[in-house]
Length: 88
Image (cartoon, rainbow, N blue to C red; front, side, top):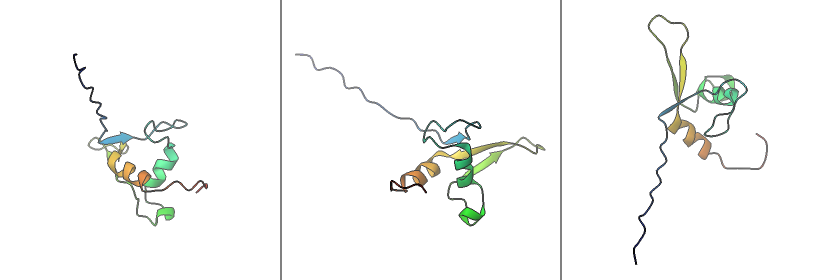
């Protein structure tokens, strides 16, 4: 009797993710653009200390750039929040 080969499934997680487009949800956690922005930008709601790491990638001399969010930091933040069944 021949033993079938084992199938190993590996999930590859990105190092960083971009913010979802306006009106779309993040495919990894289902968060909106504004929800992620509240986690990565210093605001009064987070005492100007964002709980999730991010950075802006800009070309030299550019005023605008691409905000990249640390996937590991966002994942740790999401998984550290137990489900309460209540709206936050």
